[in-house]
Amino acid sequence: QDQLVQSGGEVKKSGASVKVSCKASGYMFIRYGINWVRQAPGQGLEWLGWVHPENDDTKYAQKFQGRITVTADKSTRTVYLDLSSLRSDDTAVYFCARDRVGVAGLWAYDVWGQGTVVSVSS
Amino acid sequence: EIVLTQSPGTLSLSPGQRATIFCRTSASITRSSLAWYQQTPGQAPRLLIFSVSSRPTGIPARFFASGSGTDFTLTISRLEPEDFTVYFCQQYGSSPPTFGGGTRVEIK
Image 1: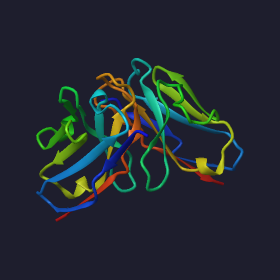
Image 2: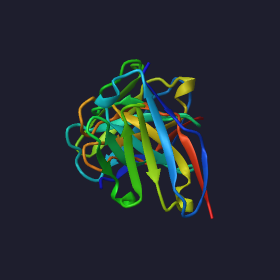
Image 3: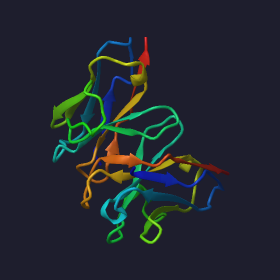
Image 4: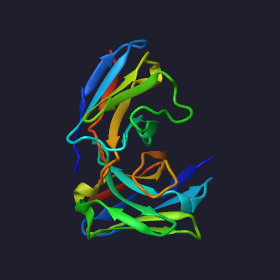
């Protein structure tokens, strides 16, 4: 079945960078965009960015511009989130999530990764 | 960005009762681009509703939703034990996509 499997938890110091991976299986990888969404402890959901693996087109939330990079590797069917200059308020569970429709655009998310805990300490 | 305000924050009900959750957006939603997700503790969100009122395959019919413009509603017709958890609305018609703050449905 369609599945996204994320890398394991990370513990980082303030100012460091983190790279989280999201490996897709069960569907045509290049057809569907992948989003990154995070959830701070006890909080709601926040969208960070998106990549379309077919043409590597990306979109980012303005809040993260300059310190976020989202990439896709077609050979390994893996999407990566790179977040730099980490602060304590970046502590959250980071989810990857697939666009429901296989056309570039804004869509609901129908397949989610299991989440990756990123803890940032000073 | 479009702000989504959910109400109530917490809903206390008994199994078998009807739950109604509201989502108000700060601007009118385009292309019916409003979704609802269910999230159980420690799990990723699950898509319940897309395009305001459409259910993905496998979502029970007791979940239904409606709305237009800036006011949207998720209804669970008869609560099952597994429905007592948290629900989020999301607009994806305008970038950036944004989510509501969540509604917790708890057992009364």
